[in-house]
Length: 363
Image 1 (tube, one colour):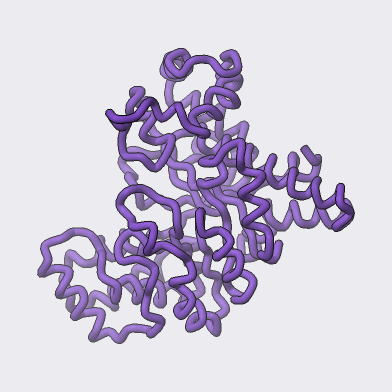
Image 2 (cartoon, one colour; image 1 turned 30 degrees about the vertical axis):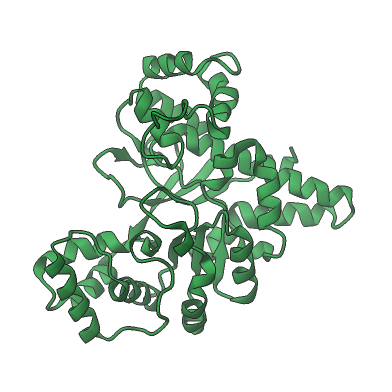
């Protein structure tokens, strides 16, 4: 691995917390991938690229042989306890800063910085915010959202419109009257989930107008979303409409639409992209997928994220495979004399941490 990549102090610009408590085998396997549970029609989820990566690369960090059996791995993991396992893998990840979306299962998770000396900064989940303030009714909903955003200490906001309404969002900024009418419909439905296109669009505009970078889940996710509605190209009109604000829009994960995302990052000045959880999801194939993602994207518009959730292993593997894939990409360019070592070192720093510092104004 190139030294400049190996030593880069990564900023994980999108992740979640780690589990406070141990989990059984089914619980562990269900967190390895986006599957909600182990299928009775299949085999173990250890029979996946990511499952093999745990046995190959994580086992030695728990003082186990390479490719130890899944059962032995989990016995050792439970004997150490959740706190020690979290400490081992988070420390080994080499991540210096975590931007944490705490809006998913906060009762089960604790922030990753609790186990390292790294810094941790909050990302505000917009739909979660809407679900908190809607309890007071439709009247005044827009004002309550604005007040909550104004008082937030978050460095960014996140939209999960992909899960709730899809990414084909109308580009027009909705009026307060249309937002109140949408919230009325939401409350009349009896649902506690924010799943209205007008409300999702309102939340995004309000965050961007306050200078908050907005992260969008894009592409690969669990069974709650319809992948056909998660192509980032569906955001084109909204990206065009929000470009004059000059506030970053971050497209997360993107697989299998990572080439589409790269195009958007090239043509829109405020768009940034990553591979997110796809990096460790494809595991040993990460070098090929990262090279595809970097085909046309400007190197100043690509970031690292793990989207790790629950398992400390996912932070470690996300960083490990990202470093290895980026090193392979740069080494190939050096070998073909596409650029020199100074260029490789600059690209490594841009992608590893500088782009995140600039986009989120972390300095």
